[in-house]
Image (cartoon, rainbow, N blue to C red):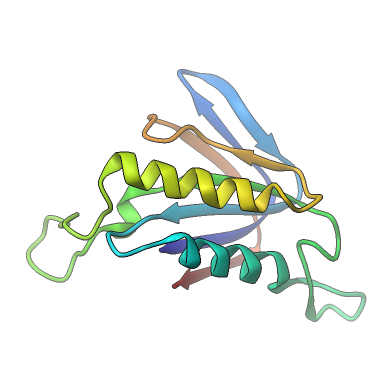
Length: 145
């Protein structure tokens, strides 16, 4: 399971030209689900993301988590994170979990995040989405488990 995490000043998901969801300061998470991923991978990522100290404290050091400062999270399913570009010029998606199973694990991930007191928003699994964001920093991390 891969999570590309971006610290944002704002982010939104639009579908067919209409805003579906949006957040203000917080994290935009692109989540990719791979064949061997299980709920234990999701649990690890949720715990790590909620505790990851990537927001600045009063001394301008990354010392605060999204939970510490009560920010928001927007989670977007991102099938292409499972892509392998090592061979040739066309990505291979052989390592991606089949859509039904990937959706179940994506929904599980979101439900675990929603157990926190934070405002959690999502995109729509398998939908064509336009993502808008203002990156804060920019600060971007890739987590894999």
